[in-house]
Image (cartoon, rainbow, N blue to C red; front, side):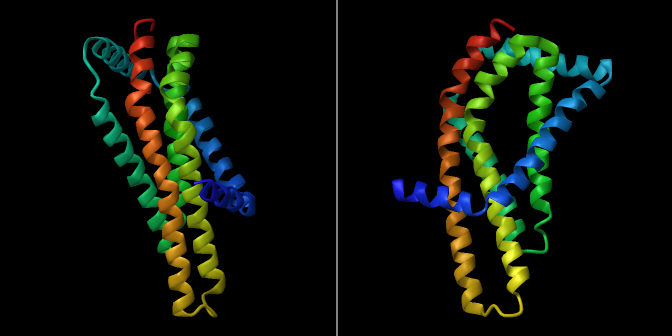
Length: 208
């Protein structure tokens, strides 16, 4: 396990430029998402607020099935990982990678921005304990898979004239295995989202 973590750390160090690029894309999405909250009409804000308050009301009175939340979280994040991986694998579709990362950041920024805007410091605390824990793992994994996709596509484009079939297959196998390794961390994120975050959601929902 330590060897695997060391390999990932070295990989991130070698591709620091690509990581800075995808982080910039993610941050741009988060910033735009948070600003988008201010563009909502009063009617739209009220509709969303009603939905959130209904959620808080229901979550206080029902038992959250942690196993369902866990499987849903893992499945949704694996779908995102698969889309990014396939976008890099098919090369021509690799511009989809920054689009997915930007959208992921936009949703995160909008969600946190709305909670902060409507509930103030309570909303920030709620977001910190219910959204942040799993995303500490999910975001680096999604960014890393995005980097592998961009690196793979760039390598194929750069070496397309002199790369033989065997080299391509070896590179593809390494690409798939590396992404599978990253995806293992999504299981841990799912455990946090399924079994830890709901505890904080139920706890803080009574104060919002």
